[in-house]
Image (cartoon, rainbow, N blue to C red):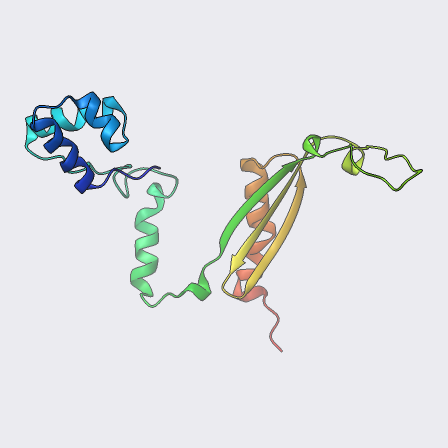
Length: 170
């Protein structure tokens, strides 16, 4: 999500237009689009201010965690000193092997043969958990990540690692 223009810039544009200049010329002078300058000037005339409106959705009502908000708040209330050590950040990235170059340089007298990695074109996805102490539960799948693959990953990879009942104590 982009950042809103600063209040200072907004006020300078409105002041420029209020002195009798056009919003289009204000856009050129201040490096914004003419539509933006027109919108700022109209908002200033209507409301008397050009403070940026809040961006994004209201917190807590939308998103994938919204149905679990009460549960998460209860967890934090039960143990308010939760630290980063308990958290696992999960990230995934993918590479499309059809974007792999098959032309390039080879030693003199030898020919470079372009073949697809792993014998065919496709997508390889890497997913892993990141903790304060390092990378855990790395996993590579053929194809793109989907809901079923993600659920399988969470149930079979990081959950056993993070569950205290499955840890080996020396």
